[in-house]
Length: 212
Image (tube, rainbow, N blue to C red; front, top):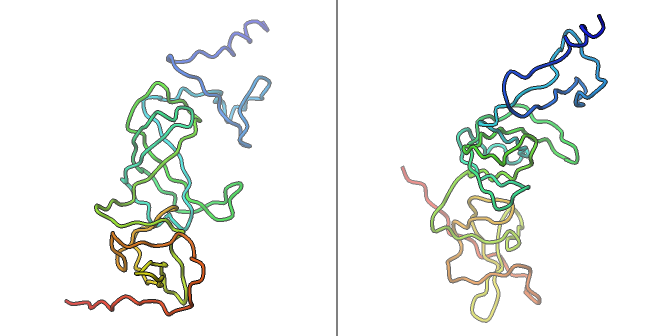
């Protein structure tokens, strides 16, 4: 009788594929010895590896830049030479506190366009979301920019001296910023505050006029 009952606990997968053990309510994976409840009889799942998603978390500072349908460049940490593409398909409405994070972050789901045999569930990826593109943009490292009294300026070489030149910035990422006004391609600016620079006023940008 016991052998007959034991045979009833043999689970056959309905199809070929990779088996992923289900998780309990506390997030731990079900393993040998786990008690299976009649209210939650799932032991394992067969994921559809032909359609893969990547989850990433965006800080509350940058989440306003993220929109559905934006293209994504995806890299695999396990294979740095592998490059995939994706698209933003879902943006969380409520932020959450993640471990080792001081600020709230929002979960963003990205559908991976390609079907690759090297992809496996729980792999880590690097996701570069393209929020905008600009052609012929003048951009500088963030170290070049300084602020005073709500003005953004750079230290620009002008002849044999150095001046503080106000600039107007456009798109900004974690490394660089686009300069919309205040500089030209041939201008030379400093990455850090140059030595022996007198405390001169900031050279202001001309006022812009809005016309209808």
